[in-house]
Image (cartoon, rainbow, N blue to C red; front, side):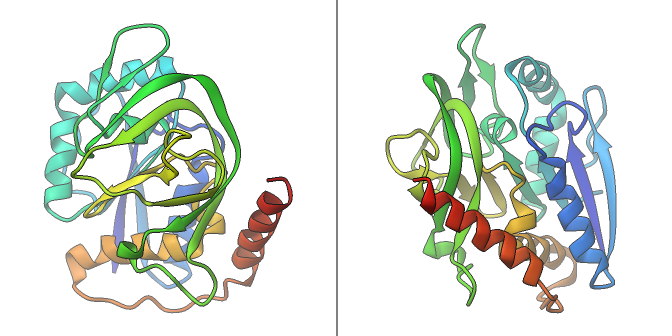
Length: 250
């Protein structure tokens, strides 16, 4: 088996260690004997929707988002939608998450158009929402394991994201701010598209979510599969350490 990975705008959107998510996907595939190939698609490149099974779209500052938003409107946004329609999986963090929605309004400058892949919109707020975050996953994801039904991470954003009727939250905030600091939601998902504000990075200390994404991406080509179990003691130690730390400084 082989997993073809697209790192969307990875040279521009890589805040707070987001590249660690790519590393995690690659290593968890390789440890199972699954080939993983990564291609950077950036500003000016043309996306080939049939080439990739998994797309990662990281976070960035407003200046980077301006450039990336404009590039998405030139065709890559529609190509990404096409890829999702054919079964590809998308994970987007922070700035990437915002640009999967309808629009983002920054503090300064014009409205930045998203690609409407998720029914969300984002408006820059007056305060920065920063710190450790713990999210209880929505039951619809069926990610509860003997280890954890939660995601842990670190958030750092002023954007307030609000969900429309067509999109469900990734989970409920137990500690932290989440999408907007108001409604206790964090992240969003629709079918095989997932977005959230968890930096830190997300996947190394949430191996259950990493494997969930790998499985969904592979199944679009290979049908129903069951990943070989890994010795994740180090990963779960990191998960529990982050969970404990967040609870202690709540």
